[in-house]
Length: 309
Ligand SMILES: [Zn+2]
Image (tube, rainbow, N blue to C red; front, side, top):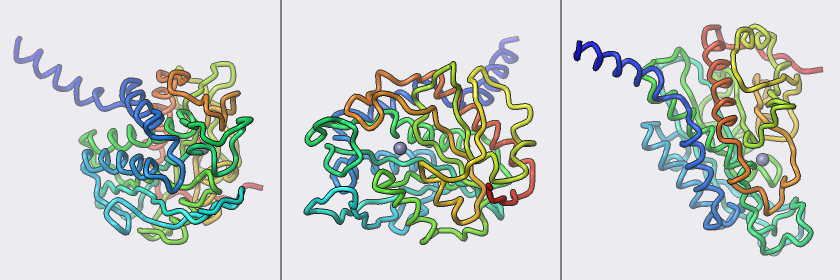
């Protein structure tokens, strides 16, 4: 009897312990959106600190470095929206690979940069300069999601029929610069990418709206893949494959995409986008939906791209 109970618990743990949890998500968001991170502005030393935090988790999950300098893919970003003396800024994408020995790869991404101290443009604060723009929803929430999915797929004891490339993009807030740098300098061939799934702002779930899932029109297979997805977290689909965030860079290269987004709010691009305003339970629910979609998609051959008209 004792033996049986122990065996049962072992099975439970393997089946359930790996799913994304509100606690893990909260730990990552409180870290990345703390005042210590100074809003993760592109070119700042805190932006590098945030990149290092992501690389450290990737390493812990046993991912292979797939940048051009270990986990990092350095590039120079240019500030164009405001005139500043230091318009050229060094930053990185952070890239980890889960090699399942498959021919094709699924990309999961989220940008880790935000507006720093409000001196790089696009803040909605009245006097942004010098204020910490913590960016808890935008986009510490997406990075927390990225890390939880990396943990899930690397620790679930399943060898999936696709490889995974996990990318934390730099300089999204300056105009999708990190994702554009990646698609123009890919560290694995673009024609071996099945699809790209992006998270940007998944922390402000509103039950009356639900989470928006974009990219529904970028492959004719998405409608079948969405069939049977079950969740207490409400969602709706949107056909568009571009607009608003890094998935647009992949769509432009004719790669099917998904885009998870809980919508705009009063704290958007303001210093008040803080961790205590995040709905952690719903964020975990959104990751649960994403896992179901990815697992459904992996039952099919590589998706065919469709242009959204
Ligand atoms: Zn964002």
